Image 1 (cartoon, chains in turn red, purple):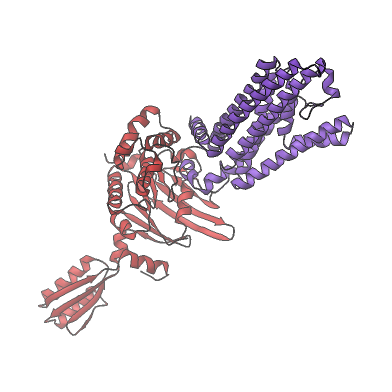
Image 2 (cartoon, chains in turn cyan, red):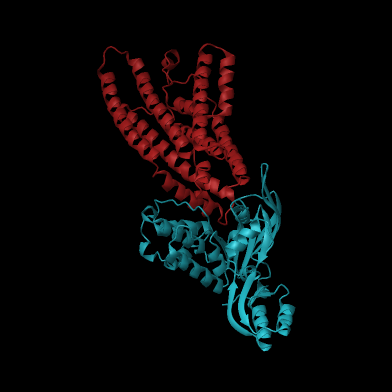
Length: 311
Length: 278
């Protein structure tokens, strides 16, 4: 069922002026960020960018030097703010003497779930991560990928409204990664907000509605991942019978358009402009033999951003 | 509810630790040897014509005090080593992150862990000391003047050491915590001996030094209180004290002080852990 936006006016996460200093090192420097409800929000950044500190601050694991964080409308300093939050830490360590069911039962109790709810939710969570057949196995017998899955199960056990996943697919094989992506998409369809911290940029590109890139503790870019990628489409077209009128109209649409030896080159912010340029050329009698769109990967753009170049 | 869940979890985790399994195994050996030793010692005392009758109860009392002293040492060490990594260790290996991210205040984590460990070490203390007292009572019909107070005092000693260890664990790594608390306990035992000697020698400075150390760490004072509750109170004790006898027993108010000490340790541990970045 779609959530009623009017009934949920607060964003899932609202960070204002967040600053965290460790000794002489500033991990987060005046961060302002809003994660809207119902989205999959990607947090990107190189090692040391401050992503994990931001996540830990949200969850009350780290005390901010300055600034505030609100989770689902409550200040993160209030433990109740985490009542509807699920969290999978990056380096989740397990008490491996527990069985999968005992492990989830313990975490269910920490969520404050009643015994009857735990009895219902634990099999659901195990089934959701593909571990229903290992419910009574001790965690010490689990593979690394299975441990990651049981970590995910504890994160979704309380049917969270906000799910924070720190590198959720590390240790998983391609099938496992796909299952996690499917899980994230399913949760979004149920109205759950997912905050995803991942180094796998293709993963971010595939599932995130919104992305924030941090570098040196500051927000350097925020927006839709497709927008980030589409801003730099480089187009190369092989054309013939190009008239001056056709070039003039195409240049009116793409000012950086160049033409030499039957090859047109220009950049476009999106596919719509490429289509318009092609239409203008064809309308004036030009022949289009080939067209190549060179779209830099999110990874290329991410590297350029954190190296300080403009997108 | 969540505090109790953490307590149960900590208890079950603690009894699986190798150090606890080893301690329990060795304790069983100790109890067997103690029972055997008590049996033969009492039999010799019953049949001996060399030992004068008025001394026999004193020797039985010394036998009991020896067993209780070993129990208090073992339970104290168990408390220290079982709890030394309870906070710092779990922060280091990151098992605490998923727990602390749950909707519960941090004091519940500290208190829950303390409750679980306290249940374990107090059970150990009461059961082992109870078996020691019962062994002597069954064989020689002697259980001191107040075995219940002795069990209470021994439990308090264990809880003092446990609470101090939990406090240390909020600051320092496991090894540093266990060494630090053990050394403090050793200083307390040394000061306790000095205090008793000061009583015999009528030296007020030595007695005061023992008292001041007891205020810093009241673990040995609790052991002395337990010994005082179990030792034979006839006049012979005062003229022929054994190594575990207490000539100047601590005030019963020391139990209240130890309780306050435990609460203070926990309050400081909670405040420290609450302000800590994980």
